[in-house]
Amino acid sequence: MSDTPSYGFDTLQIHAGSRPDPATGARQTPIYQTTAYVFRDADHAAALFNLQEVGYIYSRLTNPTVAVLQERIATLEGGVGAVCCSSGHAAQIMALFPLMQPGCNVVASTRLYGGTVTQFSQTIKRFGWSAKFVDFDDLDALREAIDDNTRAVFGESIANPGGYVTDIRAVADVADAAGVPLIIDNTSATPYLCRPFEHGASLVVHSTTKYLTGNGTVTGGCVVDSGRFDWSASDKFPSLSAPEPAYHGLKFHETFGPLAYTFHGIAIGLRDLGMTMNPQAAHYTLMGIETLSLRMQRHVENAKKVAAWLEADPRVDYVTYAGLPSSPYAERAERCYPKGAGGLFTFAVKGGYEACVKLVNALEIFSHVANLGDARSLIIHSASTTHRQLTPEQQEAAGAGPNVVRVSIGIEDADDLIADLDQALAKATA
Ligand SMILES: *Cc1c(COP(=O)(O)O)cnc(C)c1O
Image (cartoon, rainbow, N blue to C red; front, side):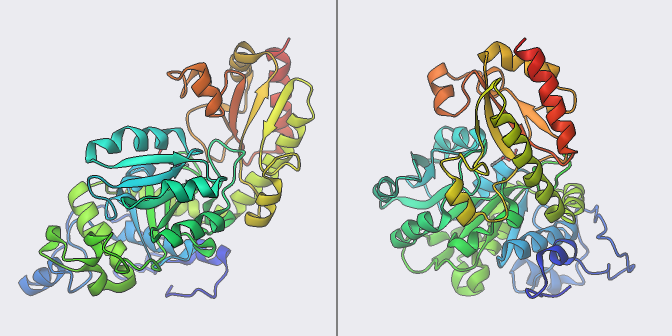
């Protein structure tokens, strides 16, 4: 299917990027399980290596199965291009890589996936990069945190673990005024619930491991470019605007225009960092995306029912879900995320740590796993698992106190999920 922005989301999630296989006519996208591609002749090879012709060289850079997924995600997000990576965390490094140099920083939301907090606060220091964390509800603090060395602002649309939603437009206006791109991690919302480019974001990253694949089979990530950021407006982004020494002095922005960031991601990012998605993973994710809208509708519907039931239950202290009328973010969620506030939330169990551990053990449908965005319902007690190394104060600050569990509501029958929680809460609080 060619570029057809007039088609609706449900059509594009099945067709965007995919054409019948030119060699066989295969209707479903084949898994091109190959490392390399035969050049027509030496001139063809030279043209490919010079980026004068677009084509396939080696699967660390590009692969036809992965390319279909890239085009599909870019289309669903309303972007001009996308680069798929081996995981969501790889996508985050790949997103920052063209923008950053030693001494540069990213200004990030305090409400992020725990793994991202560690990646940004610890690991990126090894590259000479750093992160400053600010509350995205405090736009003055955000403005103040951005300095001459800031190269990006980073937040999540619907935040993981849940309960918080970002006003992307408000944050994008601050980033725009400072001349730096806003990167939105759109993993928990997916382009079905939120298209960050429509709210002013410049770049989007995904952990495709979660809702986009939707069946808990493969890890993957993706960086999507809106094509709208002007890399040449300042001298802040020399990898894109000035001659790039890692590609014999090529000026990416001048040469590729709106596709500069995507081409840089492949020609330098994947070439030299090698965080490549494999074609098998792309296949599973393509299968998942075909039903994305249907699943997201059910995730939201079920999350609303289960959250409302839990909030009314005397064994539960509180529920943090932006889709509940009682949430401090209810108005913002209605305004910015009208199709729903996603399928993730946390709740606090009366009886604290011990009761949470018993609850997790007693559940039958919910699986106790460190994952989210699966078709099946998942639960985790952060204080005894992912946040175990933190002090009780740090756990509270992260919204992962000893009395709190996080759920990723699946697409099963909501009544069965409620019955399961009911019987497990009875055992946990007996
Ligand atoms: C899981 C997740 C990531 C990391 O993705 P991986 O595929 O596990 O590397 C990043 N951001 C969010 C919001 C996530 O849920």
